[in-house]
Each structure stands twice: as structure tokens, then as C-alpha cells.
Length: 99
Image (cartoon, rainbow, N blue to C red; front, side):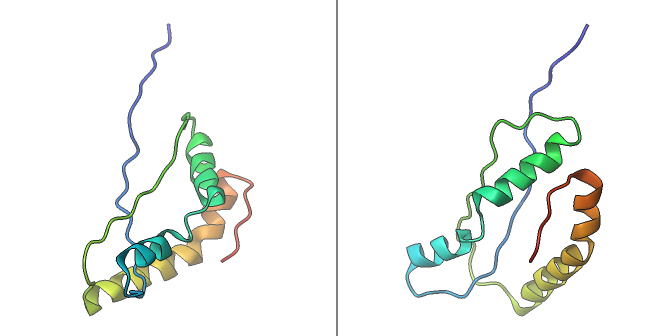
């Protein structure tokens, strides 16, 4: 007998962008790199591990002005992720990504 489980994959996602002066324009700018291709890649990575993903979405909300220390932490994390991204993708999927 098989059992079906349903749940949510939860990730806190942060993006640091330059303010454009207008709140809506800045919010749109923060979402600019969230493409259907990125969402498809996230879905593919999770499904390659044996999970069905019927929906993937991201919604960013304004959190405030980041501290210099937080900007440094985010930039370091991005740099480290870019260095290991090809290995992770090659292991889990045949999707090819370029930054």
C-alpha cells in the first residue's frame, strides 16, 4: 500500500536592489530576475529528488534598508552559490544555467 503526503517547501528569499524612488517600481525591479525559467528550474531540481511540484511562486515584500553587514553577508552567499551551482545542477538535472 502506498501513502501520499502533501506539504510545502519553505525558503526565506532576500534580494538587495537599489531603490528607484517609487515603491512599486523598486518592488518590480526586485522581482525582475524571477522568471518562468527560474521557477521551472527550481521545480525540476525538487522533482528530480522524487517530489511532485504542481506550483512554484515567489513574492517579495519590502523589508527595509539593509545594513552594510547584511549586504556583505548576502554578497558572500551569492558568490559561494555561484561557485557551486554547476556541480549542484549537474548532479540533479540536465538544466544548463549561465550567470
